[in-house]
Amino acid sequence: MSLSSPPPFTTPGDRMALAIDRHVTATSTTLARVLATAVASFDEPGPRDPARALHHLSYLIETLLGVAAGGVIGRVVSAVLRGLGPDAGFAFEIPLRDALRRVGPGNRRRVITLTPAAAFLQDAAARPLVDELGARLYPRLAHAGRDHRAILTQLAAAIPAARAEGFASTLAALDDDPMLASLWSEHLQVAWRHYAVAGVADSEPELPPELAGVPACETWRAWLRRVRGEAPPPEPRNGEYITAIVA
Image (cartoon, rainbow, N blue to C red):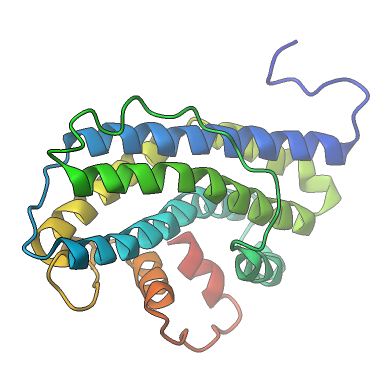
């Protein structure tokens, strides 16, 4: 039986869950593969204060996880809104906001198991911070897949029954979208360059200047506030929230 064909005798809800599972598996695998390739190319920054550099590495990892979530979920929301029309944004706003609030370690949904990358890294002694990035971020992507599934499930619940098949088709069309790999690779490369130059010494993490003008900069800002423990900005008015997430 083809993976693109739903098993017989399943309910619409079963087929939706299958489409979501398949999408989460595909995107989690893409994120992990690109990460392994990128980390293998990174140079060790050689910080004067390794302890501070390690501390700031945790900020970088948490922020990159936010960028990964923005890439996965933002693509889906953008595609669905194009298919349903501009008025659909209001139907998505509340369930999406609720889903994002639920993302975190308290969620006990099933975790995607990723095949470990080969020797992270084989030259770990020569590149300890690069190795730490890969060793910490790689398994965290599995937990991120859990959160992505929770958000997609919330989105699916907001789709009118007559449009459910269209939502599942949208997910299938994005399963192997090369734009996710390209976006994730770009952000990894820029983030590491910024970390290697400034992040190992700065007292506070900040937005890489190269990303200040790109659409995903709001994702960076939101997650930097989160990892710094800063108060979130005021709640958006109707229609603003989706725009920020899609960006």
